[in-house]
Image 1: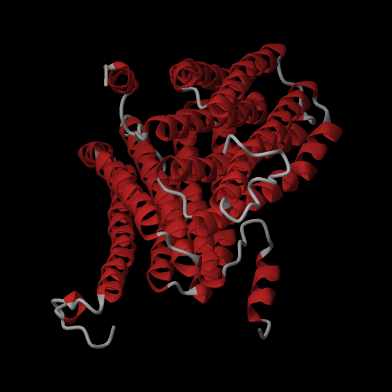
Image 2: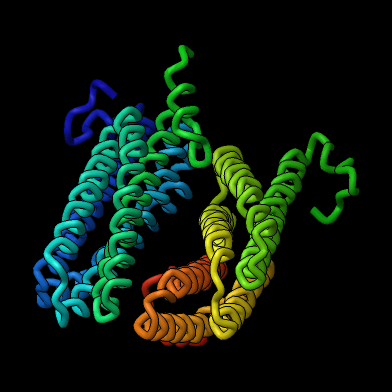
Length: 250
Length: 250
């Protein structure tokens, strides 16, 4: 491939048909990776806007998130179809196949993260009729900051197929789970103190739940990175075991 | 393929190597379909046991569901790997490829349904310390009956790749969503009437939520059936549109 000009002049030479196919194939593989990152960026924006709409009581922003969800869905369907085409036409084996499978699974998780953002935006519309405590909103904001960090790192790990970063995200998700539990317990306390606070407390709980699920799905994406890079399926193995296996000299 | 004996004697004839490969390939495709149904059966049992443990306050049963979740996970990982092998070695195109992709997606949803069963079993352990109202448990049982029916029909639709049955499940899921909303509203009423009822009401709500999610995932499986049978991706298209498209003369 090293003798090709950018416009593939060498590649079109009658003696190098295979390399031309290879070059186009390389483009296709890079293209689906790029499209995943574009979808990831859109989903990150949806999550950020949904959280902002919740915390600020911004109904217009919430409705924009809800309206824009179709873009996430369309993009996912399009990339999914491109992946199926690649499998059918290029018949990838080994590493390339693992990439395409990782992409198919990653875009499903990204689309579901988009759904969680839409769910939060709907809660934001309901919650705008109430007056949550400042501490409830700041707790949510804090959890959201952590979760958005996880999602960003998961997408970074995917962009570079970086196993170490992927493992870090999976470990950090434990803290997110604990924060979620803590917020939930706090809301139960508020509910028991004052029944009129129940609708608000439930909305806060469901929002925290949506964020916790976004953290989980970011971990799923990291598991696909590890699956691609190492050919290992870690989904049901403890983190300690995975780290130990991966750091063992080959 | 019509001249083969069962032991493939004809298939081993030097002039028919392709048909032997074909026959084995057919076995592989049937095998992954069968394994999906086996996984589906196990998941159905987990859901049934989890609901029973909740309704009966049976902690032993709940702990068995939690302990058995690893079987669901292992089976999913194994089928996933078999699918990747088939894609790599057989290089399926068109219809066969759609089948393998449908299987990969279906087993992920089945594994997640297994997670929801485990979640309900954990709730059952917590709830055993309390005394829910009989009506709370019977509402849950009613919802569970509907949802288990959806899961059964989704697996049937998958077994026969039956588009009409798949469409029916997607329509029936709307009723499940409504029942879920109704149970949720009822729990909020109980919570506002009596703060001491909050832990119980929350457990009932989360259980209902787990069941609602099982209904959603059963629908996902039906969408894959339609994708396989018709080569159409219906995930973000309204049911009315899909039914209209599919019934239009080709």
